[in-house]
Image (tube, rainbow, N blue to C red; front, side):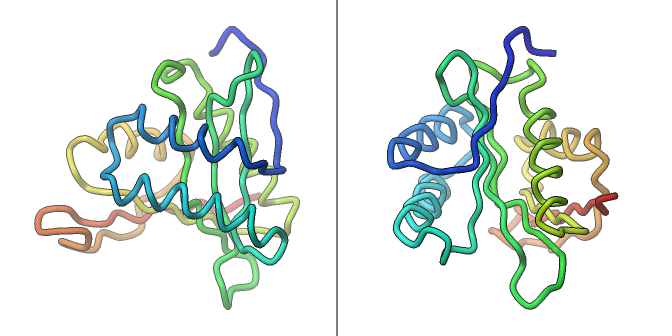
Length: 163
């Protein structure tokens, strides 16, 4: 487990956009278009406020954002949420921050009336630690959509029922 206390914040502010970019870049997992998308979702939330369907949770330690999640109610569902992003700054990985962020995100979704969470990820070998992370957090592999992102890069969908 990490050795520093993490504090949480739901409210997004303008300076969080740079932190999000830093975090997703640091992982080395994401293509440029994916990094741009992470930034775009944050900018939309800032611009539209409550009218945006995207929600954010930030994890801070020692006055630095070390991790974040982005999630939202899936349109036309009663209580199903997508987990769009969960990312931990590379220098803070393998210290328990990801698990803490997942648990706190699940609590927030429950408080909003959420009953199910869905997360998608790539099948590329680079993402094996991500698959293990989801499974260790109690997520079930529900489906695989062959060659979804590109040839040889399928979409894997995980889900979890919240209690």
